[in-house]
Length: 247
Ligand SMILES: *[C@@H]1O[C@H](CO)[C@@H](O)[C@H](O)[C@H]1NC(C)=O
Ligand SMILES: *[C@@H]1O[C@H](CO)[C@@H](O)[C@H](O)[C@H]1NC(C)=O
Ligand SMILES: *[C@@H]1O[C@H](CO)[C@@H](O)[C@H](O)[C@H]1NC(C)=O
Ligand SMILES: *[C@@H]1O[C@H](CO)[C@@H](O)[C@H](O)[C@H]1NC(C)=O
Image 1 (cartoon, rainbow, N blue to C red):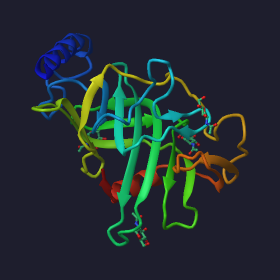
Image 2 (cartoon, rainbow, N blue to C red):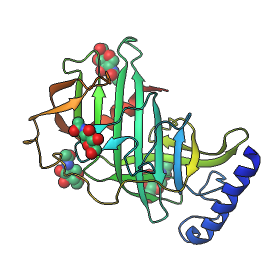
Image 3 (cartoon, protein in one colour):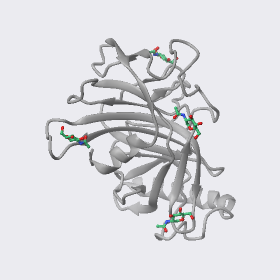
Image 4 (cartoon, protein in one colour):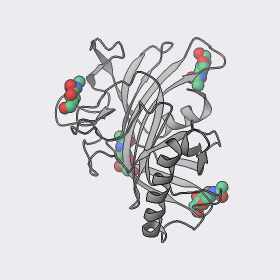
């Protein structure tokens, strides 16, 4: 059953490959990849997803008011199109070797354009409506949303057949650390491919960098708190890259 489903997926991808062959080398990069990155991929049970459900409701993030629909578990998801658009949804816990009780939660969403290079490197260029929230039990401001606007560099990508999970993708961060394996969930599923909010959020509540905004806390009880938020660039990414990612 699973086997035949995998064949269908592969057949579909084979058909798709005809279209994208101009963009991808025949082996889909230097790692013996069996298929292009085109499609939607997510880790684990697939509870973290990009895009929208059948009713058109976002699975993960509401960029227009910069809120998240917190998934029940951590995970990462990426969607890539042939015409070089992407969307990601990430909910991760990051440990701190020197402070084992200081486990940060980082939840983030972004979309934009991406580029792959013959040497296997890929670059993601998120638009300025990308945003993320960091929950740090050990920091003075323990829960804030920030703009997240930096180019993401991945040193390599891989697409292979996993014997039990089927078509699987791996992305390696700039420092070589792999993200968790992500399984093929179907064609690209993305929010509209345009800027869904500006860098300071939507027209509504915000003033400017350093202002205050409300955000939902993870409690799920829709508790609202006023927090300071700030704009940062790629600093957050290097922080993530420098830490141990636990999923
Ligand atoms: C943000 O927008 C979504 C979708 O319109 C809505 O379901 C959600 O309740 C809103 N959240 C906040 C915090 O305003
Ligand atoms: C880990 O904890 C130490 C001490 O609190 C802190 O200085 C350091 O920035 C933390 N590292 C990360 C990656 O959060
Ligand atoms: C791969 O190519 C890109 C684009 O030319 C470059 O930025 C990157 O540094 C290269 N990576 C390696 C590992 O050579
Ligand atoms: C996002 O990047 C653009 C282009 O580099 C820059 O003009 C803008 O100021 C950045 N926004 C934030 C919030 O960092």
